Amino acid sequence: METITTTVNPNSAAVEDTATAAGPEPERSGNGMEKAADAQAEKESTEAAIQRVKFAPLKEEAVAAPLGNIDYLKDVNLEASVELGNSNLTVEKILNLGVGSVVELAQTVGEPVRLVINHNLYALGEVVVIGDKFGIRITKLVHSV
Image (cartoon, rainbow, N blue to C red; front, top):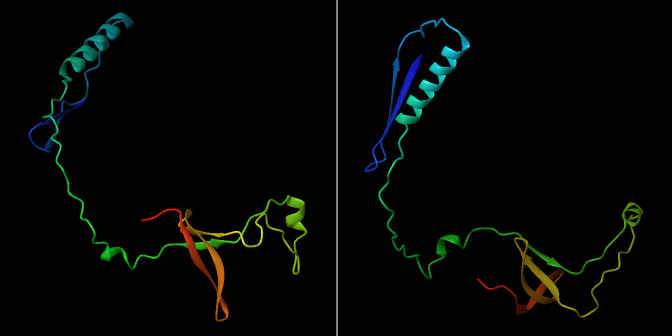
């Protein structure tokens, strides 16, 4: 049987485990009552060896967050998408979609589109054309940094 003793010092982060080998456990003879009594005695000695660890109380320390300097985040890429509108379609309608199919959206003409950044609504705006590309002119910030 091997005995493992764990020592915890509450004043440091050190934990020390020591193991001692006691050799093979001697074979016990006797009836079931003696074995049950031996098991109960071993359980009680194990429970007596277990002690609660007392730690020093934690101290709250104020950590000042850096203010105003987000330069190190300026080159992080975020997913941005513009939602022109939405529609609910049945599985049958989706299976029947093909080249040239038209999907009617719930939004009306002139209604603002949604600028979504990392799956969060960020702003509302209107669609604009810049050269041969589409863009969005923000008309209302919904969520500001």
